[in-house]
Image (cartoon, rainbow, N blue to C red; front, side, top):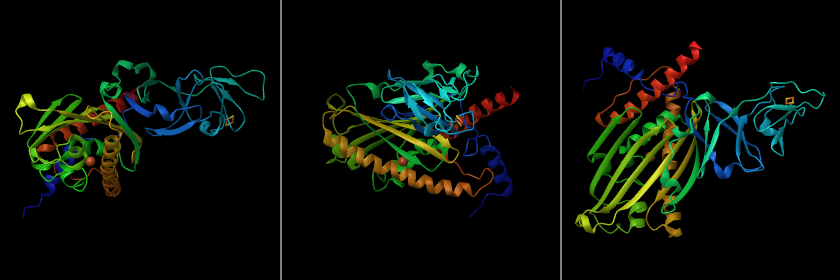
Length: 367
Ligand code: FES
Ligand SMILES: [Fe+2]
């Protein structure tokens, strides 16, 4: 068997240095989901996002607020303090901050220093999530939020959940783009053996990468078979598209139908999952998930069944990629990786992430 030569390994390493990995700087000038709407209430919520500590709360009029979670007096965490109206009173010496992050009271003196405060992060609430901009506030353009209309469509039934992932977000993007793993990592849950060998098409546009797999005919795993009623046939069609939408969002959408029926008689069943990836640190990630379907929308039993099945599978990703992360930690430089043809959109995704990160990083270094 021919093994790669040292020269080949060196050139592969060089190529892989163009791709993002767990050591790549974060992309701050981007919208990420900071929390589900329901998590932000009239209590202080601490969360680390892209390596920065943030405290969330909701004002009395209901608007979400995100502030830097550090009192500039002596660094006490404001999330360990308390809310009074719309202000936070530091739990150490009582400095008070308003919802803009401005220091408005110092109890030990009459005059409050002017122009002192903490960073306030732009946030936008859309449907069931709160988006946050961790970068330069001047660049926070709401029109760039990768909004998903199906998540807010009343004709779709959605369920959501959260997983804490001990792994980096780049590997998770790659995992979602390379669904050949369904036949292996998810062999006991949502995968079928034919998935990895099915024909596929890729679409590579700058910043938007897709891979569509046509598994026809096939038998459906229970999560799709039972919910669509196609479980008793081996003529089902399963068309799934993985799509990188932004550094914080990957969508997997799909449709199922009975391929034995003529096109005009087919009933199509559509699903979508928003895999919302927000780095916590370089080796941990907040994994927000919203799954939706456009069929059996009133059937709560199906909602519960699908949620349970899908989260069992997502848990497999978290376990599998957690093991991967431990291995990656053992390498102190870019490792030698072999890629194959179906990796093209994953490579494009990682190359794009690296490019965005380095552009931002280099601009920061110059300024
Ligand atoms: S550390 Fe917050 S008031 Fe002193
Ligand atoms: Fe998976």
